[in-house]
Length: 133
Ligand SMILES: [Zn+2]
Figure 1 (cartoon, protein in one colour):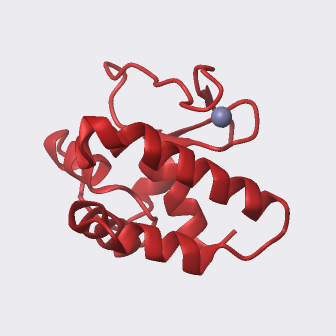
Figure 2 (cartoon, helix red, strand yellow; figure 1 turned 30 degrees about the horizontal axis):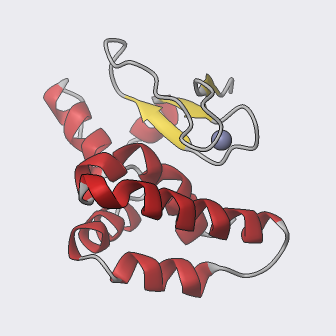
């Protein structure tokens, strides 16, 4: 899986904060479509990049996440530093709890704190499940 496809799975729980409320559904639909095309074996990196470039706030979020060695969203990095963890490096990412959509892993999410409510997958309505590693 390419980094940009990974980003597409990671961004979904944060779309509410990144784009206008009226546009969230359209963004989710577009990302969902492209992830389905990716699952079918077709290259979608360029289309995902073009989509993300179309929105400055999303573009910044994607750049921040791509800039993290473990592809952690900026909200996760900020949450870790609030918790007193080193903000970068040192395998911090590997110690985070990872959650994915139980249907087809179309959404991926890192839980920073046990007080955070585990989100549901926008496409399937299922609560994300923890990845056992
Ligand atoms: Zn799903």
